[in-house]
Image (cartoon, rainbow, N blue to C red; front, side, top):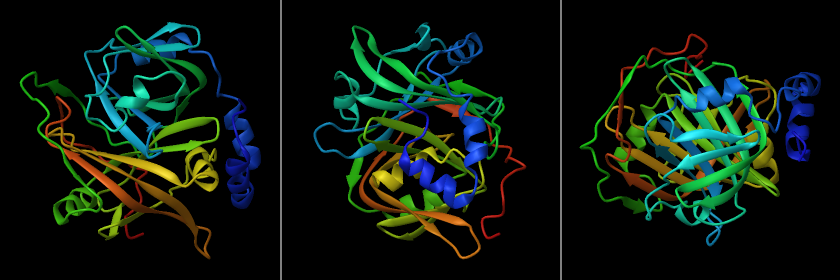
Length: 295
C-alpha cells in the first residue's frame, strides 16, 4: 500500500503542500525500527481505530496495560496483550481476522507519538497487527503530562449509550484539550491525535461538533480518508477520572475563504463509560504551539 491515496493527494494539492508531503512521506515505512520498538514498550495506553464489521460504524477505543503490553514481535509486527471489554464497539473488529486498524501510541510525558496502521490477526493472548505504515509525528499540539499513576481498584462502570450528546457530554468536549480521531478508507484505517487549548472543539448542536484543522505535517491522512469515506470515530478521555466518551458518525472538511480548514462531525452514536481507563495523569502543560481557540 502506498503512503497516500487520492483523497490525501487532493487535499495536499488544494493546500499546495504536495512536495512537503512527499518529503514527509519518505519517513513512513513498514518496518518497526529499534527506537520505535523501545517507545512502544514504555506505553501504558494505545488507541485503536477501526470499523465495526457488522454495523460499519467507525470508532476509536482505548487499550491499557502495564508497559510492555504493546511490543514489537517482529520487524513488521506489533503484538498487543489483552484487548477491549466485550461491550466495546470495536470488540468484534479486534477479535476477528484481517480487519484494517489504525493505532496511535501517545506519550504525554515526552510529547511523542507513534502511529502504526495495518491488518489485524487474533492471537491467544490478544491480537497482533502486521504493519503497513509506521511513522512518528512532531510534538505539535500535544499537552505535556509529566507523570501518571495506575489505580488498580478503578473499574469501568456501566456505559451510557445514545444517539446525541447530552449537556454534560457537550461540556466535557468543550473542556477537552485532546481527542483521538479514527478514519478509514478502502484498504486501511488510521488513528490520529488532535490537540489544542480547551475550547478548540466546539459543540454546535447535540448532534454536531467541529474543530479547526491546525497546520501539521502536510500528510492529510485523516482528512484524506474523510474525503474518500466520511465515516469517523472520536475518543475523548478524561485524563484524571478515566472516563471515556466515544463518538461515531460522519465528518467532512470545510474550507474557508482565508484557506483555513474546519472539520465538522455529525454524531450518530455515543458511548460514555465512567472510570474506563485505570490511569490518572498529572495536570497538563499546554503545548506552546496551541493557537487560541478563537484565534
